[in-house]
Length: 316
Length: 76
Image (tube, rainbow over all chains, first blue to last red; front, side):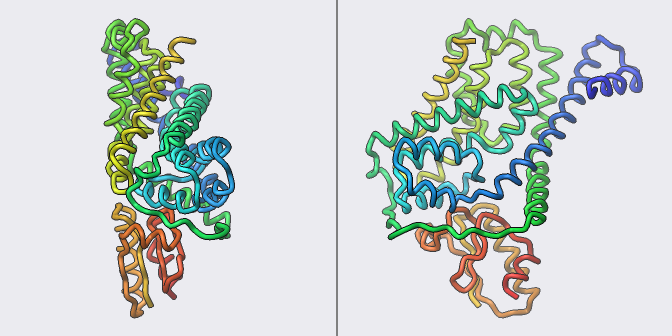
């Protein structure tokens, strides 16, 4: 329905000839931008509203009563629904250890939370639909759970630079009573705030995507990111790291690249590397953990992400 | 009255500090505003999502930037 409206706008009102490259590119650009921005607003609003019912303090109380393995699984799951910003990574990390939550379980949360941030989820859903979003979340959880268990097994307690004093006795988080109307208003403001930050990236991303869609030949993309190139997955993962927080701009590009022959596994690796591995977060974490621990953390996640990419390309 | 802003120097923490200053100036109250960026002190307040707002030793808000009006209501 939306596609038909854009067709009328471009081909009839603007009188651009159908079938010509420039009109196709413009059609694609208008269609994608409006669709993505609309779905972004809706999804981010819903996710934010749901998240207002979960606080990191409550999650910590709950996790402190769980053992390893169960804890890893639950921590990864909580990573999806708990609000997380990389600027809170340190208090969160220390706070978990204070509550005697095992290091591996803490890492499961620390891997899952940025991977499942609301912008990435909203972009994925609006561009690729629920199936790819579910695959992304599912395999992201797998990386977070396995990565956390591996780090936990390595006994790296001495690599934490700040000594944490465990909290004595039971940990109890006070429940805050917030009226539903306040939650609605806060979710609305948060959504607008995010939109103000990312709309330009979305425009640029879709613009570049529309250009590739119209002018870059499919054979070119297939030769770099297609099935014949065994290095496509590691290359995509490494390229993803410096693109942190630009999920909004990069996702529209990935859409076009997959439609032009990039394999889905390679695309998944790329997306996960963008969200899960961020250099600014590494710089922040350097204040509480040794370089060795950060390297192990990033190395484990990188390998996990590449594994997901290869696995996916092999079975599809 | 002593107001503390807990935060390790992110943009949101600065925004909260600014809003707090405005709220105090607006209320005409006498309050000591202090920015706490020592992570160990923040941990002592049991706060895991920054920025946090502490009034007279009691944590009143975590993880968000309050508006000037909201802070005015809290110190009022």
